[in-house]
Length: 357
Image (cartoon, rainbow, N blue to C red; front, side, top):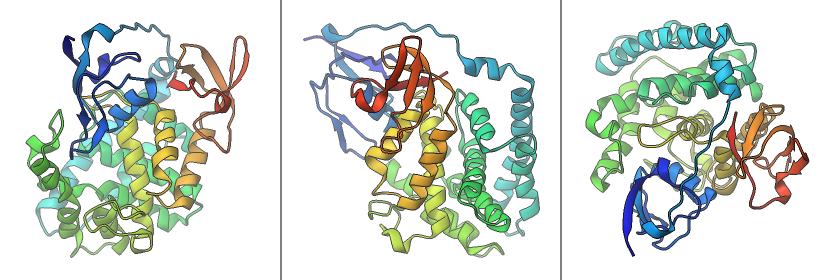
């Protein structure tokens, strides 16, 4: 059978994989001959697969036209203000982060916090912050943008966890500085548009140790240093750099790990589009409950899904509706009201939310 190489953006259900597809560290995701489904395509996106081969005879083409509520938000005055504040703070933050990584000067804690304070000052609440970030997801993220995003998400998360204002400030700083070690790595690796080689992935994993080295002698809260070191550790011991298990991982590092993964999944990259938030929630439910602290991950997911009640969504069969109620036992499968009535997605195994509009 003839084969054709396609990008992940061209993948549609019904296509048949023409090769084994592996993660960047060479773990098998799907085997040759696998029939693609929406869930499998989401999984490929999650693992940052940029392109792969299909059997040509099985391919299909789907064209979707939609009028997005997100586009209306993007054209609003408040989003333009949020975006302006974000980009203004980002430019200053870049200079400060580079300065921290390259010299031994004292870290300006108040100055760093100002970057998030300026952005959050015009936000009504945590849900509003996520609305604004969701509408910016079409932009490709660099290390700096990702760090600010994680800090904003961590700030909101800290309020959900009912932390003290002092601890929320520390948690926000953890988000801002968690990836500072990446600034020491070769830019051609950090900005690579496709799968990393084994040696490149080994290099990328050193950013946690490099970040800790940069911060270890700074006069800052120890939790900020641990967040840089441990935000890729996982409670089941599958993370890096030390393979720590739950009790060995700092609590703020556990929180930043969730914010880091959520932002990475729901942000665009040059090699893949942003995942729908409900795809991310589904992946967390399926694969994350053992990897992340149960209290933190469940609090995060429950608050996230509540923020989408009342939002317009498109289902995988192209039906458009509004989320009306959350299923506590299946957070990624809420009850959606459409023109033809209510659909309980927890009872529809082949139907799920494809996009938030």
